[in-house]
Length: 579
View (tube, rainbow, N blue to C red):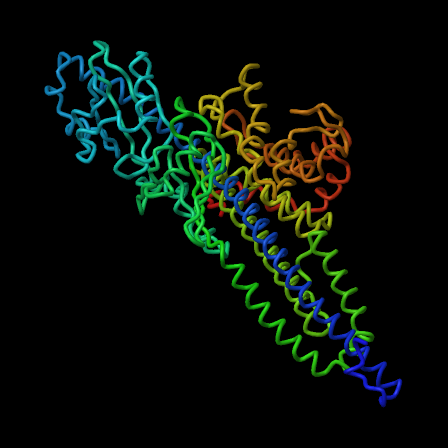
């Protein structure tokens, strides 16, 4: 009875069949449109969540890698501050414990550094300083700072902090020590981001670029536990209704959200390493994003789908034939592309010959593919920024180590080409060889630059540098193969190397290549305690050690490269910028 008003008794059977098929097609299309809307809504929700999760994790790793790189520079600043604190205590004693007898501005001028002097009284108030904005600063108004100052009163030892934002702006590193008469606390603060060699480590250099590339992310900010921003340019303080979420994140260590309409403020605690003040200088990352942007896309999609459904009702007969003939093929094509995306291949666009619904689904999947590819690119570029900062740290610390790494890199790349390695493998080898001696940043100059042979204790410390380099770099998961070079380039093919005594092909191939290049360069290079060997002697030694110290396959490739250029390049060595 349902179809009687539509069909009528005089209509032919064929017409009735076409009418029924038409109704079925219209019903199916309506279901597909509604289903697509639901699927697209869920997909948009899940995609936004995945995008935010991936972006959050990659940004935290980037922030921690930047912080580890900064820690290396801070160690040098720490030595300077400790020496100045000793002099500061002497001046206090010469003034017979009367701060008014100390010319703080003259002390500041004599340092030749961006350093300010402070004197804190027993009420935890800054009474004297060379930094006018902090005059009269009451630490009791800041709970985390107050608890830290109480620790200083309880010991006569110097206590240093990691870099942190000052109450009135500026990123500084502080050191504190109680006076011998226990009447005052002497404080020194060194400003960062002002010296040329600190500039490359600033948070401001990368966080805006990441936020701009992330799509829905409006901004990224990093604060200390007091809500003061780590910024050399635009100092901000967490205020307003979102402050409650910020404080809760600090107290619990758990991520907190504050929603204001469509805008979401997200606060995540990021631990820091080093310093005497772990509870005082932790970082809080703020991400601000628009929670409604993806919903707008969905609303537009619904309007588009309603238009398609109306068009399908008018042309239901053509649509019936179209569905029977064309649906299976494009769905299979889409399935193949989804499998490729799941396997990590983002380079092939999703192209199908299909109707609007399936084409729209394909376009959505292709949009997701492009977004994932760009996301991977952004993460890779962010890691490369950190790796370049590490290379700059190596060159700044010790020029001969930087040039050695550059020479090893050149030799290793030539070997890799002879072995016909892929572009990705050569890329990993390039970064890995440039950074293979990064761990030597932690070795004292007295050992690293010693003109004579090293004793057993010094050798043991030197042999720790592969593991030290690996610990610095291990957060860059996209460069796993490159990082393994730093850890394993001193392993031997016969299993007698260090640090893990790996044997044969258990040693990653790129590390085996670096081992040959590293040893060859070390033999032909002049060292403080010996002259470099002739190239032909070094080549013969590499060949002799094939199968014991080195992989025979790698040695075979090494013997095929041109070795004649290396003596000239070493004799005419100049300052080399690795980047």
